[in-house]
Image: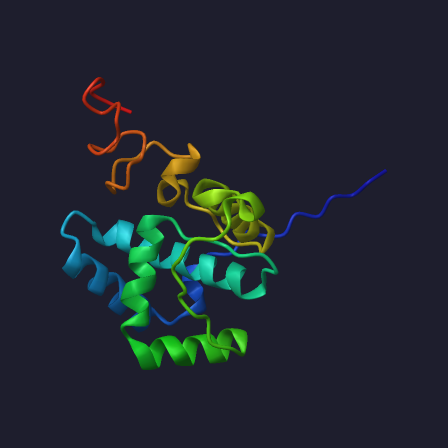
Length: 161
């Protein structure tokens, strides 16, 4: 008989204190008026889950466009971001945008699928609404050429994604 012990899924939002979590959420909301307080709170959690998974991953990971917006907001709080990285990971987690070799890393969608897998493997909650291009959510929060984005080629042909 095999006993499978499931470990509880961790809300990565708890990796920072309430005040910092609210500050990052408020910074994102100040820039993007369509983001609700509830979505912003969840977004901070997804950002922190991404950072935690990336800090231990041997392969490159990539945030979704929406998670990247939260990362930018956190990075602008330079001291808080540097302290968080040092205290939580023992190192600074750099934001290095760029294009990785598609053959080697699978392109953006492949990287983000790997990221979601890494977040789950690290024991953190994955909120599907923050990873829309992976077809694990039905959302319209961003306009990053998702399946129901106004920028998507099929958006004019259909009324909903």
